[in-house]
Image 1: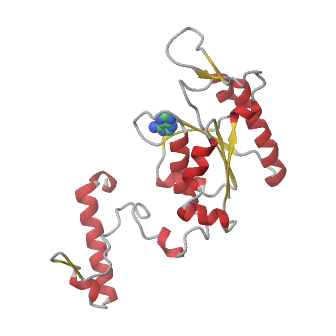
Image 2 (image 1 turned 30 degrees about the vertical axis):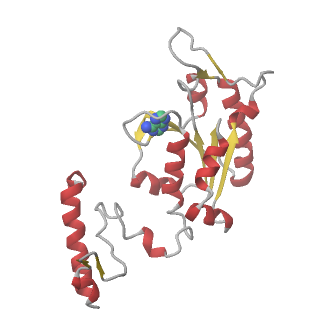
Image 3 (image 1 turned 120 degrees about the vertical axis):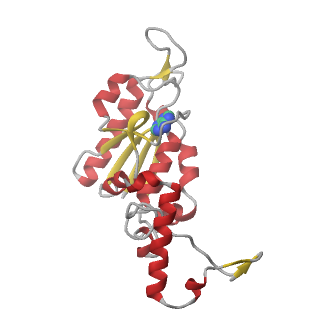
Length: 229
Ligand code: ADE
């Protein structure tokens, strides 16, 4: 799977993703992530990519042309590789709220383009021309779309075959079945007077399974009862 991020801050995006599990998957060739600098596509002699909003108001708006040219260059590269135009996800608090099911659906794509805005946003006309999905990562406002794109890429990439070591681990976890995951323990058996639940040391797999099921339900009721409705 290939992720393409259109941004004014490519180092921020690559720096956040090329470590740990996602970094390892990139090195193993299981994923490709590229951050493309929108500024490289400005034709302005001062490399300007933003301007004052028509009608007045605070802040600056990213201009349509560099975003459009950047997308067209990417589109050409993607179409020549996989034969079809990619979905283009614009990171905005005005979008549909991202969740695990959306991650699963997006993980089916071969290429995904993430468009990150900054300042007061991007000229509406280019959004109308290129964006297929408006996506928010939650009801709060961030300074730009880079963190949301990184959050989404992390959540989607770990669902791609071979990215996690143990195939099982993406299946039995929080949200996979609409519930939160059961608590986990590792050595030592006792830590500052707190013991690991005895059932986990029993070797009785059926009992362990039942205990985990109960704990998962209990935890969901306590912490996220909304998931059970
Ligand atoms: N850009 C600014 N805030 C955002 C959010 N909550 N989700 C996605 N993109 C954003």
